[in-house]
Each structure stands twice: as C-alpha cells, then as structure tokens.
Length: 173
Image (tube, rainbow, N blue to C red; front, side):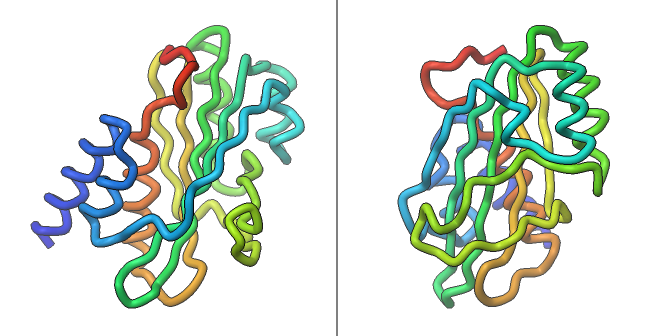
C-alpha cells in the first residue's frame, strides 16, 4: 500500500509540472490515444443541473476541457476528464465549488470519447477530485472503459489529473 501512495505522490508531482504522460507512467498507465482539448468561453452550455444554475448566478470567464484515454499493460482502459474553470473572483469560484463538489448536483459535460475513437461512456461523478487556486477551479473525473479498476485507483486518476496546470495561454489565477 505504501508503494501505491509513493507512486501517486510522484505522479501528482509530474502532473503539477505539466507532464501528463510521465504522471500516467508513474502509476503504471500510458496514454492510449492523443488527448483532445476544447476551449469554451460560454461556460453555461457546457454544464447541466444545479451546476449550470450556479454558473448563471456566478458567471465564469472561461472553461477549458481535456480528455485522456489511458491503459495499463493488460488492456484495462480508463477515461479521465479534466476541466479548468476560471472566475472573476475567488468568491465566485468558491460559490461554484460548493455546488459542483456535491455528488448529484450536475456537472461540466466531459468531452465525448468518440473524439478519441472510443465508444462514449457516461461519467458518473463517483471518481472525482477538484483543486482550486485563487479564482481557478480544476475538476477531474475518471471512469473505467474496458476491464476493471479498483475504485481507489480511479479516484487516484482523478486526483492526479486535477494537479495538471491550466492549458498554455491561459492565466493561472
């Protein structure tokens, strides 16, 4: 168990440096396909549920999303969705985070897996992690696509992905 904690800690360090491929390698995974990214200036359309209503009350300034397909040597495959949401103030970010961090309140729509040539899956929000830095919130989710993963492993994928920095060209606030 200690080895898993060390691997996850090292993977999170690699993710913070922006090296997603190295982060996945640290936990025995590899990127299966080139990841896809999208930038949305209109955040409301990319959300649903109470999360969407929260954004109507507390508008964000931008939303970037990325989707990774990762696999282990046995062919077990997972999708990891990451979203970076920026607000004008840390107070607006905090109000939004209070809603999105509650299971069942809605979500940011992940990019579709068919963009990676995979069948679409539904993200459940069970394997979720968020990190904030000032007025920016990073939200990550993971789901198994093929094979099986221990729930703690899927949670770990979300924790690692949440450490990834904002896409280039975006403020880090």
